[in-house]
Length: 359
Ligand code: ATP
Ligand code: MG
Ligand code: FE
Image 1 (cartoon, rainbow, N blue to C red):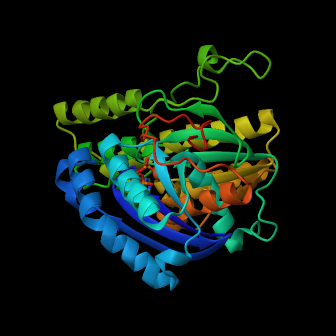
Image 2 (cartoon, rainbow, N blue to C red; image 1 turned 180 degrees about the vertical axis):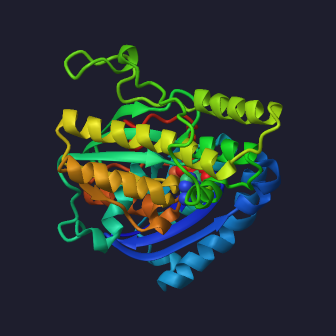
């Protein structure tokens, strides 16, 4: 089916168009630059940017795909999770389009769309049969999310295995970057700086890896597959303050590298552990932090050692975009799912198990 997808959960306004698993257009407009001076995404600014860019982004996607609105068979939109005001813009646009064109509307889960996007990347070798691997795990790491999922079926069975209990991984990168005097977004800046530093220079804490949280495979602790990054932030602040108080220079590259290693060591170890224990033989990486070079390296090493196949979609598909929404919409339409109608409200904390909002 020919599906149009709309994404507006955070700072990217995205409109994507797919035919089945074939990507026809993926137009993204980001308000990231407007958030730089605040060091993080400001919801009000993001919402206003969505309002300004949604129609031009839609028009550009239709032009790129060389299709008309009349040809589109269904519309999919991110209904959550995300920033409430930001979600509202995409949802209102999608409802308006649905009413104006008479096409069915599917209100879908942003996190599940991050998984479904893998079907669009033919280099991953899974689009042929239009099916994701059967025993699939997903690791989603972005500015707003850090989650390990089990994907039994993209259209009706996705389960949360673990998540951050405080900051998201990307958020931690952004906060530490600020402390080290680097610009937002902090992820790319730390990634770059860390290449010149020693990741063993400072031994920062690996949160939620103590036995009382981890437990064992037979008797899992309360946070076996969960993450926490707020304590790590405090540890970095304390380290910098100690050095400054002692009048010593702050080795920013070493601290960046050591911080990055502390985050990625835990993320990669727990993702692999979850796969091994839950019988998942394929791991899909998604979210903006997937761009991190050390994450890719470490995850490749550790999954290979564990005999797990690693799937990393093109980075333009990992960051927030409309094509992933269209891809999931397409799968739902193909599976015969009932559309959501237009009487739903966006849900900023939509659980990952709710793949599609019902009537
Ligand atoms: P959501 O959480 O809803 O997916 P988001 O806008 O917060 O939305 P993305 O746009 O997918 O997330 O990703 C942005 C985040 O990714 C930022 O926190 C940024 O610092 C981080 N990031 C980007 N590149 C890198 C990198 N090379 N290394 C580490 N983090 C990175
Ligand atoms: Mg973003
Ligand atoms: Fe996202």
